Image 1 (spheres, rainbow, N blue to C red):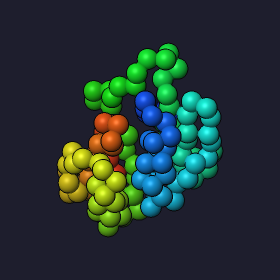
Image 2: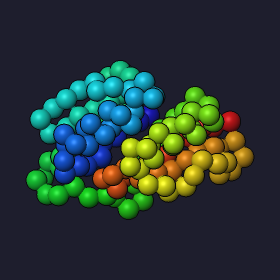
Image 3: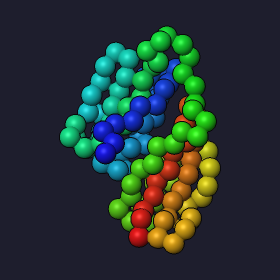
Length: 122
């Protein structure tokens, strides 16, 4: 159902380098680059994520209650990805753990302040 998600940034080159490193363990890479945005994914036919300078020319801000969730192949990948994100400067919003039966997740914020999680169902 989701085609893509975009997050705002005020420093596209710096944030672009950050997301290159963040998404590498998931096999995602840049699939589209525009003057005002960069998109990462495994292909243009699967859901992907973008980082954009706001089209209205105003400063980017973080949405309260907004979060992007990334899927993991297993619980070990959740743990490893969370540790990886922290080495890149993410802050903890919830260490890896089971949130409800069958839902294992870790939550973090990017240097731009965007809340994200990585999870495994089952």
